[in-house]
Length: 219
Image (cartoon, rainbow, N blue to C red):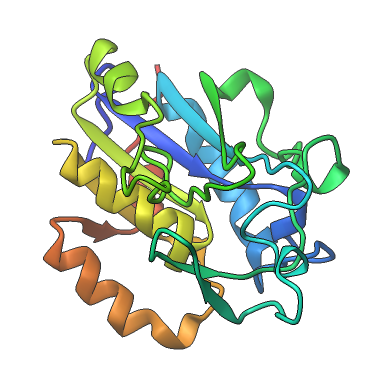
Protein backbone atom coordinates (compact mmCIF):
# COMPACT_ATOMS: atom_id res chain seq x y z
CA UNK A 1 0.00 0.00 0.00
CA UNK A 2 1.42 3.35 -1.04
CA UNK A 3 0.95 6.44 1.10
CA UNK A 4 -0.88 9.37 -0.45
CA UNK A 5 0.64 12.32 1.39
CA UNK A 6 -2.24 14.66 0.59
CA UNK A 7 -5.08 12.33 1.61
CA UNK A 8 -3.60 10.07 4.32
CA UNK A 9 -3.06 10.90 7.98
CA UNK A 10 -0.98 9.11 10.60
CA UNK A 11 -2.62 9.04 14.02
CA UNK A 12 0.01 8.47 16.73
CA UNK A 13 -1.78 7.59 19.94
CA UNK A 14 -0.39 8.41 23.39
CA UNK A 15 3.36 7.88 23.04
CA UNK A 16 3.76 9.29 26.56
CA UNK A 17 6.19 8.46 29.33
CA UNK A 18 3.54 7.08 31.69
CA UNK A 19 2.59 4.43 29.10
CA UNK A 20 6.19 3.38 28.50
CA UNK A 21 8.46 1.18 30.63
CA UNK A 22 9.02 2.92 33.96
CA UNK A 23 5.74 4.83 33.73
CA UNK A 24 2.83 4.53 36.13
CA UNK A 25 0.69 2.71 33.53
CA UNK A 26 3.40 1.10 31.43
CA UNK A 27 2.38 -0.98 28.43
CA UNK A 28 4.68 -3.96 28.08
CA UNK A 29 7.18 -3.47 25.26
CA UNK A 30 5.61 -0.09 24.48
CA UNK A 31 8.97 1.52 23.81
CA UNK A 32 9.55 -0.87 20.89
CA UNK A 33 7.15 1.12 18.69
CA UNK A 34 8.76 4.54 19.14
CA UNK A 35 11.59 4.29 16.61
CA UNK A 36 9.57 2.69 13.79
CA UNK A 37 6.75 5.22 14.25
CA UNK A 38 9.28 8.07 14.16
CA UNK A 39 10.74 6.58 10.98
CA UNK A 40 7.32 6.30 9.34
CA UNK A 41 5.94 9.72 10.33
CA UNK A 42 7.81 11.82 7.72
CA UNK A 43 6.05 9.87 4.97
CA UNK A 44 2.83 11.69 5.94
CA UNK A 45 2.03 15.34 5.43
CA UNK A 46 -0.56 15.13 8.24
CA UNK A 47 0.49 13.57 11.56
CA UNK A 48 -1.77 13.85 14.60
CA UNK A 49 -0.31 12.94 17.99
CA UNK A 50 -2.73 12.43 20.86
CA UNK A 51 -1.85 13.18 24.46
CA UNK A 52 -3.71 11.98 27.53
CA UNK A 53 -3.78 15.12 29.68
CA UNK A 54 -5.70 14.52 32.87
CA UNK A 55 -6.32 16.93 35.74
CA UNK A 56 -5.60 15.65 39.25
CA UNK A 57 -8.35 13.40 40.70
CA UNK A 58 -9.54 12.40 37.23
CA UNK A 59 -12.54 10.07 37.06
CA UNK A 60 -10.40 7.31 35.54
CA UNK A 61 -8.01 7.19 38.51
CA UNK A 62 -8.62 4.46 41.09
CA UNK A 63 -7.40 6.93 43.70
CA UNK A 64 -10.49 9.06 42.96
CA UNK A 65 -12.79 6.24 44.09
CA UNK A 66 -12.29 5.28 47.77
CA UNK A 67 -11.87 1.57 48.27
CA UNK A 68 -11.18 0.86 44.60
CA UNK A 69 -7.95 -0.39 43.05
CA UNK A 70 -6.39 -0.01 39.61
CA UNK A 71 -7.80 -2.37 36.96
CA UNK A 72 -11.14 -2.62 38.74
CA UNK A 73 -14.16 -0.79 37.37
CA UNK A 74 -17.04 1.31 38.63
CA UNK A 75 -20.41 2.37 37.24
CA UNK A 76 -20.63 6.14 36.98
CA UNK A 77 -23.78 8.13 37.77
CA UNK A 78 -24.61 8.23 34.04
CA UNK A 79 -24.64 4.43 33.98
CA UNK A 80 -21.42 4.08 32.00
CA UNK A 81 -18.78 1.57 33.04
CA UNK A 82 -15.46 3.19 33.89
CA UNK A 83 -12.20 1.25 33.96
CA UNK A 84 -9.93 2.42 36.76
CA UNK A 85 -6.21 3.00 36.33
CA UNK A 86 -3.25 4.19 38.36
CA UNK A 87 -2.85 7.97 38.28
CA UNK A 88 -1.28 8.70 34.90
CA UNK A 89 -0.57 11.50 32.44
CA UNK A 90 -1.41 14.17 34.98
CA UNK A 91 -1.20 17.67 33.55
CA UNK A 92 2.18 19.26 34.18
CA UNK A 93 3.99 16.02 35.03
CA UNK A 94 6.81 14.29 33.18
CA UNK A 95 4.60 11.27 32.65
CA UNK A 96 2.22 13.30 30.49
CA UNK A 97 4.94 14.41 28.07
CA UNK A 98 5.11 12.86 24.61
CA UNK A 99 8.32 10.86 24.24
CA UNK A 100 10.95 12.94 22.42
CA UNK A 101 11.61 10.00 20.11
CA UNK A 102 8.63 11.30 18.14
CA UNK A 103 10.19 14.49 16.74
CA UNK A 104 8.22 17.72 16.96
CA UNK A 105 8.94 18.50 13.33
CA UNK A 106 7.01 15.42 12.24
CA UNK A 107 3.81 16.33 14.14
CA UNK A 108 1.15 18.52 12.54
CA UNK A 109 -1.28 18.58 15.48
CA UNK A 110 -1.18 17.57 19.14
CA UNK A 111 -4.64 16.69 20.42
CA UNK A 112 -5.09 16.55 24.20
CA UNK A 113 -7.82 14.32 25.55
CA UNK A 114 -9.27 13.48 28.94
CA UNK A 115 -8.83 17.06 30.04
CA UNK A 116 -12.14 17.28 31.92
CA UNK A 117 -12.10 15.79 35.40
CA UNK A 118 -15.43 13.95 35.21
CA UNK A 119 -15.25 12.69 31.61
CA UNK A 120 -12.80 10.13 30.27
CA UNK A 121 -11.65 9.97 26.66
CA UNK A 122 -9.94 7.01 25.05
CA UNK A 123 -10.75 8.13 21.53
CA UNK A 124 -9.06 10.92 19.62
CA UNK A 125 -12.43 11.70 18.02
CA UNK A 126 -14.99 11.64 20.82
CA UNK A 127 -15.13 11.63 24.60
CA UNK A 128 -16.79 8.81 26.46
CA UNK A 129 -20.38 9.45 27.58
CA UNK A 130 -20.97 12.53 29.70
CA UNK A 131 -23.54 12.81 32.48
CA UNK A 132 -26.09 13.57 29.76
CA UNK A 133 -25.18 10.41 27.88
CA UNK A 134 -23.60 12.37 25.01
CA UNK A 135 -20.19 11.59 23.51
CA UNK A 136 -18.84 15.05 22.75
CA UNK A 137 -16.68 15.41 19.67
CA UNK A 138 -13.08 16.59 19.88
CA UNK A 139 -13.39 18.24 16.47
CA UNK A 140 -10.67 16.03 14.97
CA UNK A 141 -12.88 14.54 12.25
CA UNK A 142 -13.84 17.99 10.96
CA UNK A 143 -10.20 19.12 11.09
CA UNK A 144 -9.06 16.12 9.06
CA UNK A 145 -11.86 16.58 6.54
CA UNK A 146 -10.89 20.22 6.11
CA UNK A 147 -7.39 19.06 5.17
CA UNK A 148 -8.77 16.64 2.58
CA UNK A 149 -7.91 13.50 4.53
CA UNK A 150 -9.61 10.29 3.40
CA UNK A 151 -7.59 7.56 5.13
CA UNK A 152 -6.38 7.29 8.74
CA UNK A 153 -3.55 5.01 9.86
CA UNK A 154 -3.55 4.48 13.64
CA UNK A 155 -0.63 3.34 15.77
CA UNK A 156 0.71 3.78 19.31
CA UNK A 157 -0.59 2.89 22.77
CA UNK A 158 -2.54 1.08 23.81
CA UNK A 159 -3.98 -1.15 21.11
CA UNK A 160 -6.91 -2.41 23.18
CA UNK A 161 -8.00 0.99 24.50
CA UNK A 162 -7.07 4.33 22.95
CA UNK A 163 -5.91 2.96 19.58
CA UNK A 164 -8.99 0.75 19.35
CA UNK A 165 -11.49 3.47 20.28
CA UNK A 166 -9.81 6.01 18.01
CA UNK A 167 -9.82 3.63 15.05
CA UNK A 168 -13.46 2.65 15.53
CA UNK A 169 -14.52 6.30 15.77
CA UNK A 170 -12.43 7.21 12.72
CA UNK A 171 -14.21 4.56 10.69
CA UNK A 172 -17.58 5.69 12.00
CA UNK A 173 -16.72 9.25 10.96
CA UNK A 174 -16.30 8.05 7.39
CA UNK A 175 -12.54 7.62 7.07
CA UNK A 176 -11.04 4.46 5.62
CA UNK A 177 -9.20 3.33 8.72
CA UNK A 178 -6.23 1.06 9.31
CA UNK A 179 -4.57 -0.09 12.53
CA UNK A 180 -0.84 -0.66 12.05
CA UNK A 181 -0.57 -3.90 13.98
CA UNK A 182 3.19 -4.01 14.40
CA UNK A 183 3.26 -0.41 15.66
CA UNK A 184 0.90 -0.97 18.59
CA UNK A 185 1.09 -2.74 21.93
CA UNK A 186 -1.78 -3.76 24.24
CA UNK A 187 -2.45 -3.52 27.95
CA UNK A 188 -4.09 -6.95 27.83
CA UNK A 189 -2.59 -8.77 24.83
CA UNK A 190 -4.46 -11.93 25.80
CA UNK A 191 -7.66 -10.22 24.56
CA UNK A 192 -6.34 -9.78 21.02
CA UNK A 193 -8.89 -12.05 19.32
CA UNK A 194 -11.76 -10.11 20.86
CA UNK A 195 -10.29 -6.75 19.84
CA UNK A 196 -9.55 -7.97 16.31
CA UNK A 197 -13.13 -9.18 15.92
CA UNK A 198 -14.49 -5.82 17.04
CA UNK A 199 -12.22 -3.87 14.70
CA UNK A 200 -13.26 -6.02 11.77
CA UNK A 201 -16.94 -5.74 12.65
CA UNK A 202 -16.65 -1.94 12.80
CA UNK A 203 -14.97 -1.65 9.41
CA UNK A 204 -11.36 -1.15 10.58
CA UNK A 205 -8.60 -2.85 8.60
CA UNK A 206 -5.44 -4.27 10.14
CA UNK A 207 -2.14 -4.03 8.27
CA UNK A 208 1.55 -3.78 9.09
CA UNK A 209 3.34 -0.46 9.17
CA UNK A 210 6.39 -2.35 8.01
CA UNK A 211 4.84 -2.61 4.56
CA UNK A 212 4.15 1.12 4.44
CA UNK A 213 7.76 1.87 5.29
CA UNK A 214 8.91 -0.35 2.44
CA UNK A 215 6.90 1.56 -0.19
CA UNK A 216 6.63 4.97 1.38
CA UNK A 217 8.03 7.02 -1.51
CA UNK A 218 9.30 10.00 0.47
CA UNK A 219 9.42 13.27 -1.47
